[in-house]
Amino acid sequence: MTPTIAEINQQVRSGERSALAVLEETLTRIHERNPRLNAFTAVTETRARLEASAVDARRARGETLGPLAGVPYAVKNLFDVEGMSTLAGGRINAGNDVATQDASVVARLREVGAVLVGTLNMDEHAYGFTTENTYYGATRNPHDATCVAGGSSGGSGAAVAAGMVPLTLGTDTNGSIRVPASLCGVFGLKPSFGRLPRRGAFPFAGSLDHVGPLAAHARDLAAAYDAMQGPDDSDPSCRQRPIEPTLDTIAARPDGARIAVLGGYFERCAGAQARAAVNQAARALGATAHVELPGVDAARAAAFILTAAEGGALHRERLIDRYDEFEPLSRDRLVAGSLVPANWVVQALRIRQQFFKQVMALFETYDLLLAAATPIAAAPIGAEWLELDGQSLPLRPSMGLLTQPISFIGLPVCVAPIWPAAGSRPDLPLGVQLIAAPWRENVCLAAAHALEAEGVAEFRVAN
Amino acid sequence: MDDLALDDHVSDYVKSALALQGYRLDEPAVSEIVAQFVRIHAIAMGMLAAPIDPAIEPVPSFVASSIP
Image 1 (cartoon, each protein chain N blue to C red):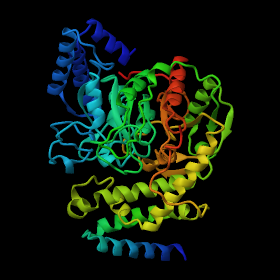
Image 2 (image 1 turned 60 degrees about the vertical axis):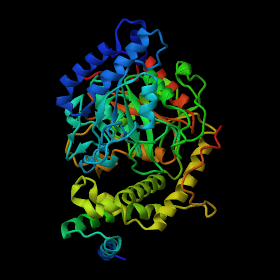
Image 3 (image 1 turned 180 degrees about the horizontal axis):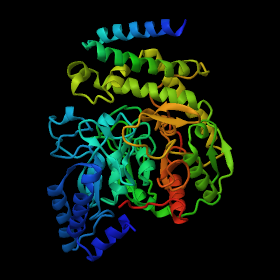
């Protein structure tokens, strides 16, 4: 059983263990396990020891410690960490100036006593779902090291799944928190668009980018999420909403919640194991209704076009000058995206408005929607194709088929890890998306906690 | 328009747009970008054919702030 954030925090508060002792144990685990998995791209030992020592010094002075005091965590390497160049998965960024301050969410975790132990591998510039990085290597799935960890926050998923740290941060543009959470068997939260500040997070597609945590337990997600909430004047995308804590109410059973399973597109794009995972979660939550999202095929297509256009535009200048230095697996997609005509983008924006209105109408009837997070469980590293519903699809983009329409309209989603013992890889986990209306992260987290409390969703540390 | 003619049009568009944007890439790279754009084009066609309320504006971000 991996200790929860609350347990670590309590041990540090009580003096049962010092923050430094927790850190040293964490560093030992990282040094033992990371060489096999390649989740970390840097271990920030010096900074971590300073932060842990500061926590212990505050305790020694009798000061009140924050809710994450002494809790080790790591971040996807697109977050600014003061004194380090922000890689965003790209060798092309390795020579960039070092960050002069932490990203907003890193600063907020530091303020509540969390201890940053390193930065994590990812697909270059977050354009991928597998974390097969040509320059920094593939991150391996802790449950089967021949398989991908998912992406683009693959290091974030693997580091938690392997028990190296109890908490990581990732980003999610089209599924980059939810896909690795699903494939690695950990909990993940993509909050509402605009909920958490993105200052200091290397962008991918500005109208779709989200920041969020991955963790071993639903309670841990809530604790980290609560600590990172709040307006941030330095981020124009961050809404001016007050902090709405979720940890205190997470154990409230979602009895009476109106829950439906997403059918149609979401069933067609789900393999046998994914459907089994959804069925298990639906049974446990008492969901019997099945509904379809109208226009979801067009929504997924529109999300794809916006991502291509925004990502291509972001990198166009450097693609012109330094094409050869970009990741071979994604540079041609980026260049192609920079050529998308404006009228396609305009149509995609209109589809987003229409889809958002249609889905909001559905939330008048339901509080929570369920869907699988990935079509299949983790695939072998290097695999190019997946078989789905009798069709052969390109694997790398298709891992986001089930997540992309949801983030397109910024809905909050929690992924809970299920072990359905079905399909072609019954030994591997597969996550279920718990989707709520905007700003209802509390609903997603309570459902994830309920599944965990009943033993339906489970974190199993990989050895 | 048959598939072959469409592919030619897409290829012509990509090569023109690359030049217009200032890219100077070798032929293998251009071929790969054409292939990527063919895929983007196919996905875009489905989106462009989708029925949509003409009153809906292309605002850049959805409005979730109305949810209390």
